[in-house]
Length: 260
Image (cartoon, rainbow, N blue to C red; front, side, top):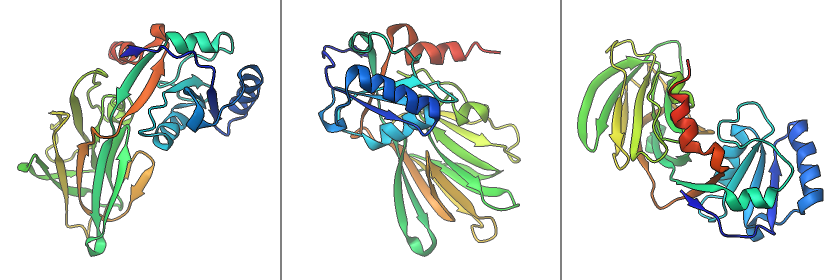
């Protein structure tokens, strides 16, 4: 993490469709103006975690840091909302640089589609029948067959989201790890997943794809009826997230592990 040296005279604001977020944007724009994102020293996102993910996707590789303020429902990736001293808060904030996962999914007719995920790439059964999946890591077969509702690969930033709900591990934001987590596994029933190095290349093949269709989702992008997918971190793409020093992401991820 790094502290910011900019004066933050030029701030861009984006808001979700929630009324509280739109009202907050109006007030903040009246106080601080509203720069175009390409001219901004920081982008302030007003909403919940969904808006934060959308904003990060929209401004990948621009080097413009994103500072979220909570005006939505879930706000794990957001800072507390406060209209006062925004430029000073931005100047004192810490920046986390994160890299997304790149998913390459092959579907019917051998058509391949790609998408990026900040939180996770997940495979889900698309019918009443459980999925059958084969899992390889770095070209080595690790699981011949898993019968389950699905499986996901999560980044440290996304490890507290769906991954945690599926009983996957919470990863420190600085950890060079990925979480490979099953979703409602039936066989092997007791397998709880694996921790992988962040440069691991995961391949998931869908067995009996015609009988047991599976969809793949990278954050908000869904690809239906996949046959196999590959997942790996893309270090060439970076995103800069800003957090108040007393509200840093690594501290919140650590604290989340002690919630009960």
